[in-house]
Length: 168
Image 1 (cartoon, rainbow, N blue to C red):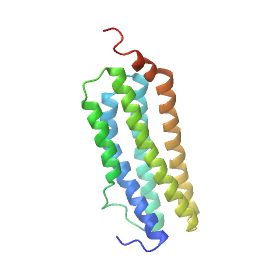
Image 2 (cartoon, rainbow, N blue to C red; image 1 turned 30 degrees about the vertical axis):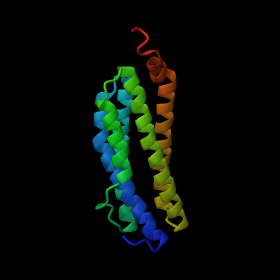
Image 3 (cartoon, helix red, strand yellow; image 1 turned 60 degrees about the vertical axis):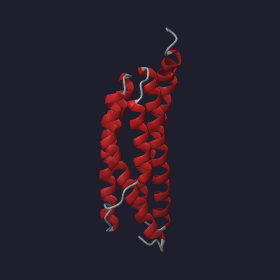
Image 4 (cartoon, one colour; image 1 turned 90 degrees about the vertical axis):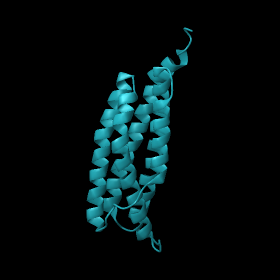
């Protein structure tokens, strides 16, 4: 795809986000299964439902712009998910793995926040205010998820992981 205009770049960003979200829909159940902390497991399951909503929102945006979002593979998300999968496969204390899962999830959230922020700004610049508002809504949900992960890490998971292995 040759990118000559901001509109083409927005389309490219949206395709990247669409691929990223769809990859995440497949990865989150594995992360939930690997988590041992009940709140973390529930958080991953809740974010799965939210992520499905993000895909639907991107479908709505595609309809408003008259574009298709399929046919692109987000390599960054693929790499982030692969790193998370490697962590799941490590021989680790449960609480330490949970702390690592939070870190992996936050890297995903930060990638998504960057993408949604960029796409929102492009949409606003192009006068697609309704699209920009939809992208902002997703951006806020991603920020909220990131904040919940931070709170869970600081209040429980990292504290528990900090004591892991002390009994040996």
